[in-house]
Length: 409
Image (cartoon, rainbow, N blue to C red; front, side, top):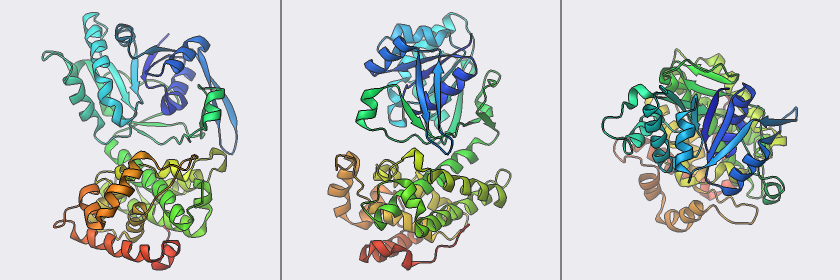
């Protein structure tokens, strides 16, 4: 039986990677830091996914087990004997796993097991380069990394909502997720034949699909949250926001702005027809009431989502490059600065609290320079547009749609 080692038994690890590979007949071995999750996976050897969509479904993922990341010798053995690997630990946690992976790669070389491919399921731009640099910090100078390891970039679009503390206590292994089940991945990264696993979609130009995910899906999702919040701070769910005619039209318009820029940037991959189909499908998915995704979850961590290479500013920069007018993306950036969404306990996300208390009082120019990373020289026009829109927005944020027209794509 083939085996996949998955670093991270969290939302994406269990709801997507583990599910797809288990269904294809693989043994799934998770590596995780949470004692309870590791113990339960080894005791039960299966877990449940509740599909929250127009056709609800219960899926049992079988033939799974786990190894604690502290047990470095066992982790190294699993890597040395695996057929493929994947990571789904979150971009901020990648530095914590390179050492463990490197030990496994050394053992794999010593036992002459051959090359292994790693699916990097982190939604990080240029992730293969970053991953390679991380591994090299822990490998000896002579290790043949480029021949032993295939670093496969992916684009993960599956939406997994937050669960309540009560739901987690009742079954810590339970995962809620939408029906969408695809891993978009770069063909060029593989050293071995691409696995025959339903749901894996190899692409020649991975940069195009990484940008599609970030500037259409992520940007549109964030815009829904931020416009929903400024429309009504008591609004809780994404489906409520996208059900509002003004917000739905604006979000489609913002995604349309980015879509036009992406068509110009990647004409071999995208055209008006497939872009419109993609946007309409996302609007439908955002409106999935059964998923119960919250405005807080989607909008939280404003500093990261306003950073230069992320979904909002990154989209604006591409639109500027391709000379695409972007008034609605600009409105979404301004709305993000006013986002103060709170969790079930009425608390701001820690980074959002720091933004509200320490960064926001410094003013719009400070935010645009220090958080958004915009250059006052080369990007003066973007800065001017955001400042103008922000100024109009703060006068009456609940009537934001009256500031501008919001044409659809």
